[in-house]
Amino acid sequence: MTTFEQLSQAVVAGKSKDAKALTQQALTEGAQPGAVVDQALVPAMAIVGDRFRDNQIFVPEMLMSARAMKESLAILEPKLLAAGVQPKYTAVIGSVHGDLHDIGKNLVAIMWKGANFRVVDLGVNVSPAKFVAAIQQHQPQVVGLSTLLTTTMPAMVETVRVIRASGCPPVKIMVGGAPVTQQFANEIGADGYSADASAAVEVALKLIG
Ligand code: B1M
Image 1 (cartoon, rainbow, N blue to C red):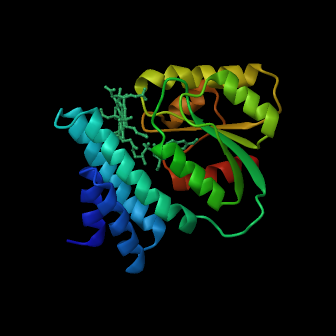
Image 2: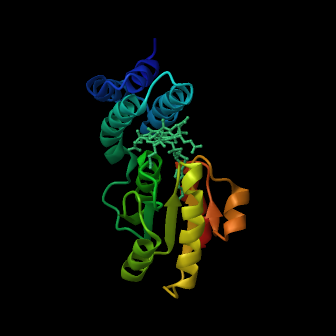
C-alpha cells in the first residue's frame, strides 16, 4: 500500500497520530504538499461522508476523521505557503451562519495565504453582520463564504444580500462549498465561485483584476 493510501486510511479511521506520522513520511518521500491534500486527504473525507450518509458511521467518527485531517493539514500548511512574502491583498473568509464545517474553508484560506493574501478568518457560524463588520474593518478586496450544508445555503443568500445592502466598501464576493454551484452563485449575485481550494486562488485573482 502506498503512503497516500495509508494516510487516507488513517484519516478515515480517525487516527490522528498515524495521520501525522504518515503526512511527515509522505513529505520525506518527496511528495508535494498539494498532492497530499488532493490525493490522500480530500478522498479520505469523501469516504467518511459516504459512510456517514449510509449510516455506517456517526457524528463522533466524523469528528475524529476531521481532527486527523486537521493534524495532517497543520504539518502541510507551512509548506503550502510562500515564505516571507509581504501580503499584497486582503481577504475575509468564513463559514456562513449555522454551518460548523471548516476544513474546506481552512484549505481555501491556506491557498489564499500561499498566493500572497492576508487572510482574516472569521471561523464558522458567521452571521451576516459579522461579515459586514469585518469588511468595514479590514477593507478586503475579496470576501469568501463557505457552506457544506444544503440547509445553510439560505444563510449564504442572506449574507450576500446583507453585504450588498450594507453600503460597506466595495468587495468581490466569492462562494464555495460542496452544495454550491456556479448557477447558484449567479442566482444569488455572488461575483465568483470555485469548486475547490486551488481554483479559489485563480478566481479571486481574476475578480481583483
Ligand atoms: Co458534516 N455533513 N454534518 N460534519 N460532514 C457533510 C457535509 C455531509 C455531506 C455528510 C453526508 O451526509 N454525506 C452532510 C451534509 C448533507 C447536506 O446538507 N446535503 C453533513 C451533515 C448532515 C452534518 C450534520 C447535520 C450531521 C448531524 O449533526 N446530524 C452536522 C451539521 C453541523 C453544522 O454545521 N451545523 C455535521 C457535522 C459535521 C462534523 C462537525 C462532525 C464534521 C465537521 C468538522 C469540521 O469541519 N471541523 C463533519 C464532516 C467532517 C463532514 C464531511 C464528512 C467532510 C467535510 C469535509 O471536511 N470535507 C462531509 C461529507 C463530505 O464532504 N463528503 C459532511 C473535506 C473538505 C476538503 O471538502 O469542505 O467540500 P469541502 O471543501 C472543498 C470544496 O467544497 C471547496 O474547496 C474545498 C477544498 O477543495 N470549498 C470552497 C469549500 N468552501 C469553499 C469556499 C470557496 C471556494 C471553495 O470560496 C470562498
